[in-house]
Image (cartoon, rainbow, N blue to C red; front, side, top):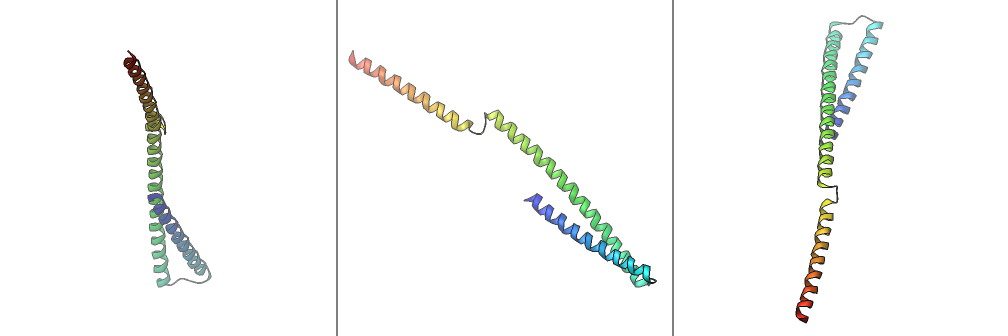
Length: 120
């Protein structure tokens, strides 16, 4: 759930980053055809600042996603380790079956002993 949310945020930031890059490229193309005025320069500076900010956010999200992947991997390894220590996925059911079998065996022996005792 956390990874999906972070992936969505990452995708959104990438899309915004691409939009900003397109805006910057468009402004730079316009700059090549004619001189740029102070308003356009300030707009270009603002777009570059936003580009830097979004690039930083994307990198931050990538780092968080990598850390989460490592944590998930560690937890999965721990789960498998614990399952192996327990004797596998069906350990509880196998133990219950063995106990039930032992109970039936002992009950059978008890019944046979009672039959012998009653004959005597």
